[in-house]
Length: 261
Ligand code: OAD
Image 1 (cartoon, rainbow, N blue to C red):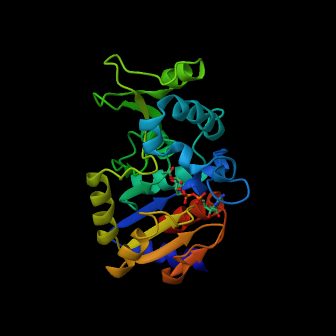
Image 2 (cartoon, helix red, strand yellow; image 1 turned 90 degrees about the vertical axis):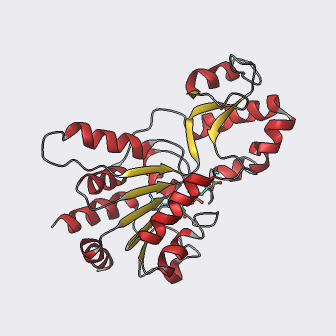
């Protein structure tokens, strides 16, 4: 079937790159952005624009506290799909994970796999590139210092609007806001990984925002086999050699097992 074909391609490939979106974290309980229950049905993207942080930092932070609660209410754990990718990375079957997610779950899964298997001879670990930053951190807009976000979000929730750094600067969540560019070095790295890849797997993303929309095409144009694992259809399904509509927690452990066979 489709996943068997994909597994064959992965076994023959030198460089396999995974690209993930909110759908991979949905089974962990993190809401997705689009669709009926999507975050953007309940919030307006404009509330979280960089321009608003500059114009109205108190209002921005008041709304951001609500969004943070909505996105990360509770303790989230990596699921079987994050774990399958982490294990493929450790086994040398996956070069890098490029993610749009800011939940940090790929990093946690990679750590768990590494910590659990220190002496079985596998030294590998996939590179995790967080294209949109990390929601568990904040960064000062003046001095640039990064801090653990939790106490800062708490201060904001208790009425410090906006929360500020020791230097007096306003904090921002350490994520790419609307109206902000992705850091140049990050986007370059992502593009070169897409170009280098022999297999490019797009997982749990609607592939409608940049660079999600263009990376699969870039990979395909330089010869990669593109595989898509996503419940809903995407505007890149037409360039994919394999499209699986399976849930990520079914498809990825199965794919990993097929590759390891
Ligand atoms: P979306 O919410 O746009 O798309 C998530 C996709 O995951 C949908 O197409 C679903 O069909 C699919 N999906 C959901 N659950 C799944 C499951 N269990 N198994 C397989 N597929 C599943 O999320 P993204 O594509 O990640 O940006 O959105 C991209 C960016 O738009 C986000 O990073 C965010 C947002 O605006 C910023 O905040 C900068």
